[in-house]
Image 1: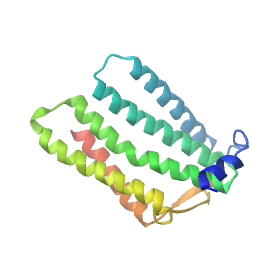
Image 2: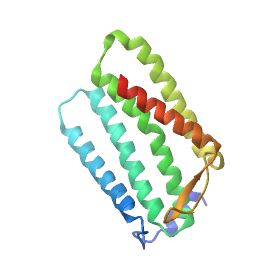
Image 3: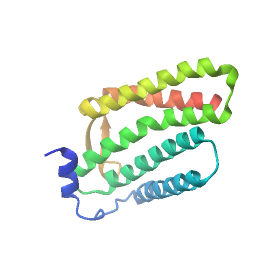
Image 4: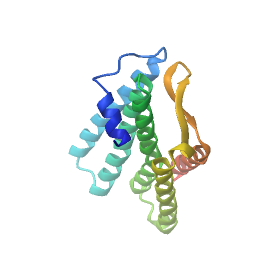
Length: 178
């Protein structure tokens, strides 16, 4: 049985408990709801198709990430926490590149288009590499989900995780100076 199918079969309705760190869990859920609302709002607005698509991808990644964080930190099942921790990171891997790409298109500095093109190719390449690592080398991306910081399940990073965090910070930093 595939781990995702097993985890979904194991999940019977909403999580049974909120940990002592419930402000974190509730804020993750509210972030997911707000992101979905913004996606719906942006979809109906008359902005350019490319800009709208990038905004939707960015906010869908945020919604998926925050909802997965909520499930990971509220479930009482190790299998569910493991699957949603992986989904959390798969979503988070693409947040910086969608943010960078959206920012570049929003600013539309045509004089720097070749430089931005190379930058986007590198950043998308890194995102794809990290997502492949997360899917096929999960033990190297995060070792396990364990009781930590008041949560029943919280991820312990693997070796690749540290490189991903550095790339995340770098890409988001670049997006802020575009």
